[in-house]
Length: 325
Image (cartoon, rainbow, N blue to C red; front, side, top):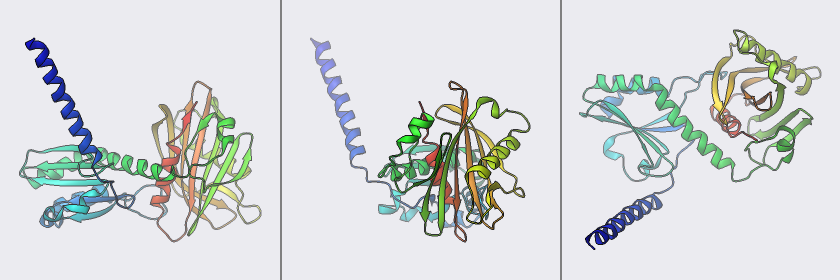
C-alpha cells in the first residue's frame, strides 16, 4: 500500500514539474532583433579594454568571400545593469561574467525563444580572453546556426511551388515564392529575385560522380565546372558576356555536411566576362553516393554599393535546406 501511495505521489510530482517546464516555455516571448546582430552584455570598463577588443576580434572579423570587408556580426554592447526587459529578447546574446570560474556555457531560450545565450566567465580578464579565443569556432557556429534557422523560418511563410525541382533533381529545397524561374533545362535550373539594389540568384544542376575528384586540384575542378556552366547557361545583359569566376580572388574551400552527405563548399567572387558586373557566390557540391552523382546548388548576389552579408546568409540558409530523396 505504501509503495502504491509513494508511486502515485512521485508521478504527480513529475507531472507537476513537467507542466511547470511547459508553462515556462509557453510564456517565453518571441525572440527579436535584426539578422546577424549579437547583443554583448558586459561592463563598459571591460568593453573599452582588452576584453572588448577580444570580443570585437571574434564577432566582427571580416567574412571571407565578400568583395568588401563586412563583419561577421553587428555588435550591440549592453551594460549588465541595463540588461533587462525588451533588451534581453535578442536571438543571440554573449554575456560576460567576472569573478567566476573560467568557463563557457550555452543556454537555450533563457529569456525568449528561439534564443542562444553564451555565457563566458572568468576570475580575471585574461581568463575571459583565453576562453573567447579557445572557443572562437564554437561561438561563431552557434550564433550563425541561429541566424540561418531564423532566415529560413522567415522565408517559409511563403514557400515556392516549383514542383519541377523535385521531379528533375529528386530533392526538396526551401526558398520563398518571390523567386522566379529564369531558365530551366533537363539538367539545370536558375531562379532569381529582385532586391532594392540588384538581384539574388539560385542555380541547381547535377554532375556525374566522377566529374569531381578529391585531390589537390579539387577547387580548380569546381571552378572550371562552374565557369563552363556559366558560359552555357548564364548570359549577361551585354551580348557575348557570361558568368565566370573572378580569377584575381582566391576561392575559399571547405568540406561540410548537408543532408547528412559530404559536401564541398566553395566561396568566391563571380564576374561577367565581357561586362562590368561582379559579386559574391557560394557553391555547394553535395556528394550523392547512392545515386552516383554530385548535386550542385549555388547562390550569388548582385548588389552594388551595399553590404552583401545578409544576402549571402539567405542563400546559404536556402542551400542548407536541401533534402535529397
